[in-house]
Image 1 (cartoon, rainbow, N blue to C red):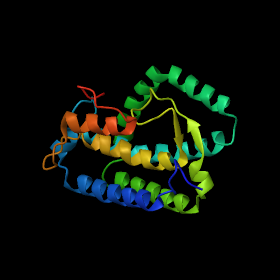
Image 2: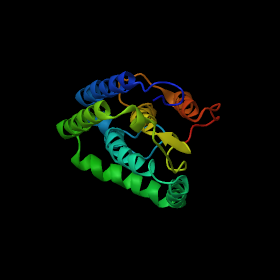
Image 3: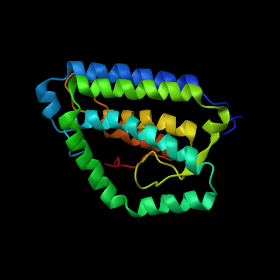
Image 4: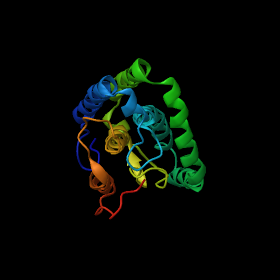
Length: 205
């Protein structure tokens, strides 16, 4: 079975996961205490909090995969209604999302952070290898106001890619010395590519 007219590209997902694993290990190993305490570009998080948030995105992917498998089998109106309910809670979601990364970074840092990412990526590799083409083509509705990379409907394959879109988006906001700055235009382009439209003058925060 094809997804959006193309056969599922498992190799690119595996490659993305390994790129991110290597990158996060490098960031954690080279960041100084001053780097980790510094505010990121365009958010209230510090670099330490952002690193955890970037890794946490892959835990979110693991949960989303289960939801897509469930709602991909249910009537479309149920999935649309579920997404609408989640969209209605966008404001508290963003507040919880912020506090969750503040608190999570107190526990997951240095070896704990990289270890958690390693375990999560290993699980995603195994699950992806076990997915059938039909499973990767299942889709569900998403709360588009929750995240700039959520679309009205997304397939299971697209959810696997979402983790790295989320990672790259926030990596561009790090202010760790020695890392090539990405800046606002780079962030806006990442969002524009995901949404399939020209970037806004100012990137969303």
